[in-house]
Length: 222
Image 1 (cartoon, rainbow, N blue to C red):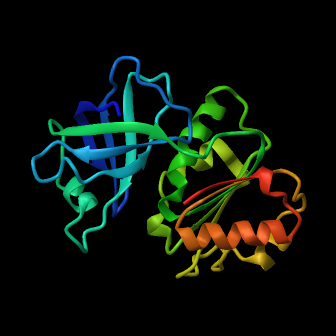
Image 2: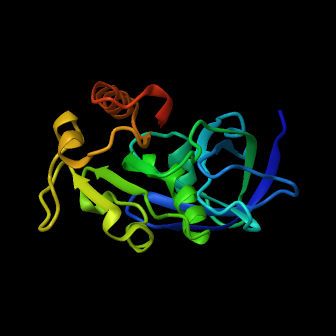
């Protein structure tokens, strides 16, 4: 297993509980949009505490970027990352990930499950190939939406936000379930990309198959 020690260039909160880390990019380091790497903090008590995080930058940029949800309610890795700032060191491990772009379709994300899609959308937008794709993004509240302005700019009317715990004027307070999919998707032969909490992904993948989407056009990551 290859590992790389990289310095944090910048670390800023982009929402109330999501922190964006810009870090050095090792020479020859590469990934496919949608992929992730295992990360640990280069401190004696933390270097063996490894967690997966998705790249959100473009692959040709000269730095790496991660958008990480910080869980402050327990003393875990993300809590420590919440206190980690520019100048600190992270350890990058192997690159992996099942989510890769296979063609136009519907992206369905729950919470921090949006992160693999950010790099894909940025890549498609830069290549002027984002047309034909849409995003259904579910969060508990409007405060939980990650990168709202940029996603809106890239996807225009094909960016649909759902909130499960609040009714905001102009938005739908409902869940992505079988009834929602029937109401909002007319073609179950296109590609589907689903990422989020395990139960969210399993439930939606099951409903999509039940509605006629074949298993080979559903790309999932949990």
